[in-house]
Image (tube, rainbow, N blue to C red):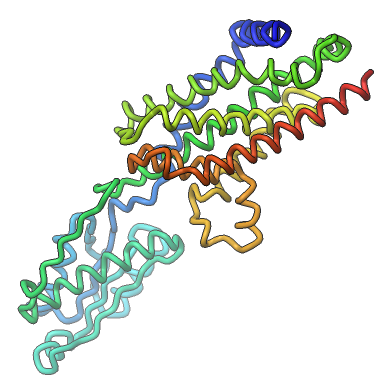
Length: 374
């Protein structure tokens, strides 16, 4: 126990005396949270559109007004309005230049058909180059048109749908994404810290002293892991409170429950870092490998951005071996929904299993390398 304690003290001194480690630990997560918090978003705050109104009737103007009254629709005037073909060409040119996202086309007989037959056609062209934005515009259009039809048929008071949104009433993307970003960053930082620490010892040659010392491999790994568990937990708490202060992300659940599962999650991340360090020859290689093996799977295969159901069966199978898949559910559940410990028994068991597997693999790989050197 005294030998492990000595390594722990040595690692703490190493962290405090290394400005690069301190930068990675405390500044990198904050910078990443700010950048990703503003850049990763599904929110649609503005839809620029033009109206090509060939009808020029009272009914067509009422329809146009319905779009204009919507808070995110901004209607633009066409530069050229001489001739029907010219109007369409001008509108399409604006769409290609990405000045607008939609074209509303109202035909000549719009009012006549609506008055005589009670129905009429009109068209909306949507810029589909961004499928997510196109889907949101389509949904907004449907809502506006349905409201217009209800007013026309005077049935808008027939049904009053009252919808209540739990956990994220304003439907802000940041509220959904930032807890996921904390999970991804925490895994990356944990893996990076241990991988750099051991790689640095290899570069300086001091790891040979550890190899020939009476310390056992598991004592070295435990001694190197414990300080970084404490540091990573402090880092996670700092990031959570920064998100609360900067983005207004309220922690609804019990912080102690989150920290308990975070310890398991951090152990799995530190184990990944030790595994990487046994193969990486330099600190740069270890840092790059830690980013690739933690960030990419955490962002793309854990459910952080894309739902797991949308992945192919092969990728869904891989996602089951990624620690972020389970911790993502935990942090979103605790932070956004106020979920309790009993809601995450399965996720906790999976984190324990992954931590044991990764830590055992790290000890075995480290031991093999040690024997090879000796």
